[in-house]
Image 1 (cartoon, one colour):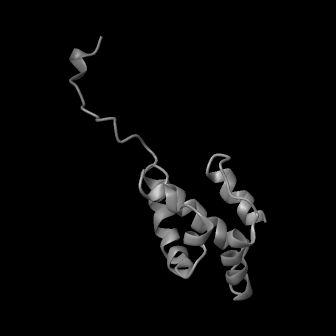
Image 2 (cartoon, rainbow, N blue to C red):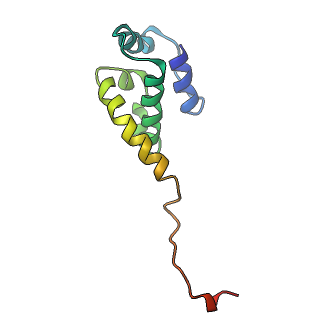
Image 3 (cartoon, rainbow, N blue to C red):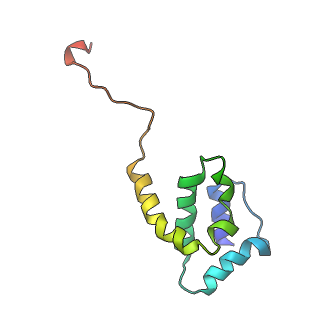
Length: 105
């Protein structure tokens, strides 16, 4: 349930009910006994970075996609996605064009 709550929080409060359908892929990964809560958080955070601003892909930020059979692939990819997001945290709308000092008043 913590994982569903975290996913709901990251989606801005629009979340998923704790139904058997939503919990099944999470329970399947937990039963594999190699994934921890932080692994689920990392996959969620990565999906938010990659897909939240993409109209088509944001609908895939859901338990069945994130925690299904591709979970391990998403987890491996998450480190790269999150490290790039931390490096590129500036605005892409700003272009720096230096000016001559004499022009500044």
